[in-house]
Length: 208
Image 1 (cartoon, rainbow, N blue to C red):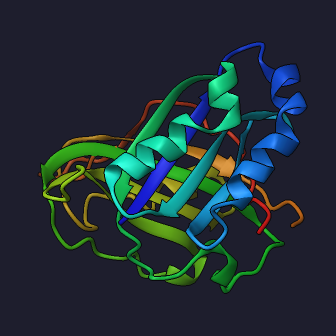
Image 2 (cartoon, rainbow, N blue to C red):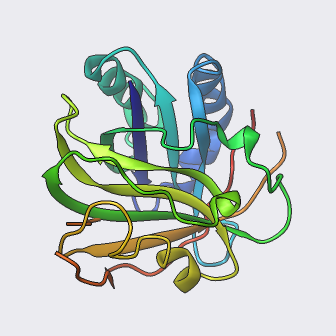
């Protein structure tokens, strides 16, 4: 089972986050084989971390909840909240297999949140710009809760357009995107356009 985990940092926790960075990396390195994508979300300056996103392949929801709650920053109170959802790897690859490589262009995390019966999700035509793409699901996989994508795009509006009402499931909904960059190492169901509900934030692909 694949899961998407998004930790959002508490305001004013940057210094504590920096102190725990090596401990965080050591913790995540224990999941190297299970990792599909990883990296920090960033502020509008493209440099200041605001949280992190990890997509992992784990045996069951309880293991995913343990993965999210045992993260050192979460344990230390760095995080204000966590989004954890079962996810399906529609592209069948990891971010390290992305054909676009690790440089050039901007990277974005895009959510479309919603609800409905689980269904096969159509992949956007330009799949070579997709780093990861798939539906967000209930623990048992029977209910569709939205769609999440990591995408390379020139700007946030182009990234948001990945989640258009003619792709996959359709429902009234909202989309939100956070941009991402490369470092070293929510609703689809009757055809209604997405409405942005948060400002884009930079995101960075994590180390291997």
